Every structure is written in C-alpha cells, then in structure tokens.
Length: 262
Image (cartoon, rainbow, N blue to C red; front, side):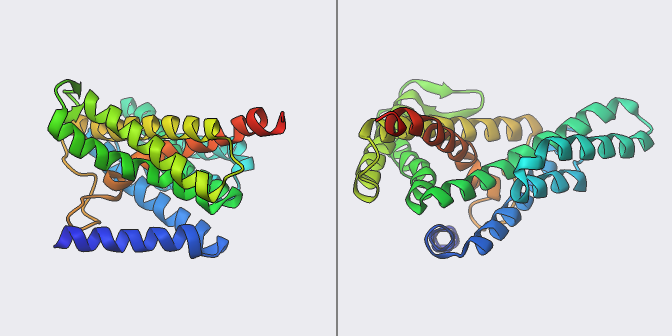
C-alpha cells in the first residue's frame, strides 16, 4: 500500500508539473529535483570511498538550470574554487576523484531537468512523451521479460533484465509515442516520432543500467529512502535522466531535417 500511495502521489505531481504548472514553478521544481538527485549521487560517491561532493556542485547545477548559456565559464570558475578548497586535504590522492565527482554529479543531476524545461517550452506533449516513454517501456519489459526473457541483458549489473524485455520496452514505447504524438502533435512526421521514441527508450534503459552500476559498485541497494516503498529519487528518475536529453537532442537536430527542409 505504501508503494502504491507513493506512486500515485508521484503521478499527480508529475502531471501537474508537466501540464499545469507555471514556468516559474516548473523551473523551481527542476532546481529542487536536481538538488535531490545531486544529494543522492553524492551519497553513493561517498560509499565508493571518495570524498562526498559538496556545495560547489550545487552552484554549478544552479547555473545549468538558470543560466545554461554561461555554463562553460561558470564551471571553470567553480572547479577552480573546488580544487582550491581541496588543497586542505591531508591525502592529496583524494583531490582528483572528489573534484571530478563534483563536476560529474552537477551535470548528471541538473542537466536533464534544464533540458526538460526547454522541451516543455517547445510543447508540453513533447515533455510528457519523453518522460512517459520509459514508464510505458518499463512495464512492457517487466511483464514480457518475466514471461519470455531467456537471454540476460546485463547479468552483472542487473540480473533480472533480459534482451527480450528490452526489445519489448522499445516496441511498447514506439507504439505509445506514435499514438500519443500522432494525436497531440500530428504535424510531426511519424518517422521523427519513431526515431525519438526508439532513441529515448534505449537511452532510458542505459540510464537505468548506469545508475544500477554506480550503486552496485558502491555496494548499496537504493540511492536513498526519500520515496517510501520506492527507494531514492534517482531510482525512479534514472531512465528519464538519459531519455529527456536524447529526446531533446533528436527533436532539435531532426527538426531541421524532417521539417525545415520541407
């Protein structure tokens, strides 16, 4: 029951943010979600025996969310600050991995949600499509893989996943995307929708495996306990954190090929 109630609350919150929230509320929520993802990432990093990434990563993340056009110089500035702060460490071997985890964590935790904002500016339906791809695909993978899965996809990282389930996930996401965007954005070529659906789904599956590999390497089961019955926020958003950037890239790039050239 706890797991079901949490899932329902997440669905209501996600639907409000995608379809009903003002842009100012959405961008504020993007920052909060990024901070929570960064916090959980830093916890996993600490479990790896690396110094926990600190507030400098949040500063980089805030620039990603609010001033992405200035991210290059801001990253260099804040990285220099982080390296300076790390000079106080007695073990100098910790400087490089900790500084690297700060930058990696900032881009990993915050970039997807800035791109989600950008995608929403294009169309709320594009954002819902990008988020729902892996919700639909995960369900198909679970049921089809449990019934027909025989070939392990990544036995060391995630023993329960199969190639058959992964293929079912791609197929279900493509069908969903074609039906949903075909209805809501009929001006988009079906070929473009299919490319975004396949690309976004595969990216989402990789995002899930990446997060699982980071956790498994650290010897932890969940990224956190923020969501009762579901673990941490990274555990629920890992697929979307890869899918949203890929869908945004494919839409932005393919737009000029499929539409502007017509």
